[in-house]
Length: 156
Image (cartoon, rainbow, N blue to C red):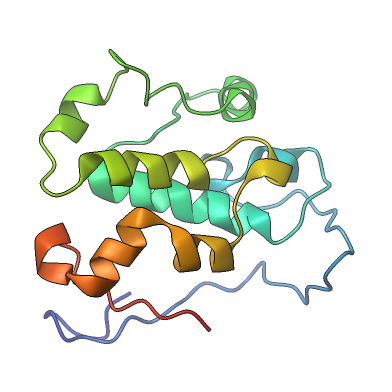
């Protein structure tokens, strides 16, 4: 949520009702969250912090296209779509035309989305890896005007 309207507004993170204390190396086992945002491994009740990278990917995808990368009115069919990973990046995919309308480095945006929405948890990049070495983040950090992002990312 934005604290107030405007470019300089502070971003406020909200809705920590399902938050938990995380211990590296100890898997989480509670299947929870809204299916549209939930990583495939959460539905298998065996996941780690990389499930949050998936959720960030869903939100980023929606910001880029205005639509869900996966959608079905049936929870069971939706979970099967999630498990298969995104096919929307393929040539002729359902949102190819939407991506072509984006300004900036569309190729880097799509590569970032592929990394965020990698269905195999072990192959999905960590937040640190994304911030340190992803081309779109680096471009946004160095030239926010060119990417249209206004990103002020820092690696902690």
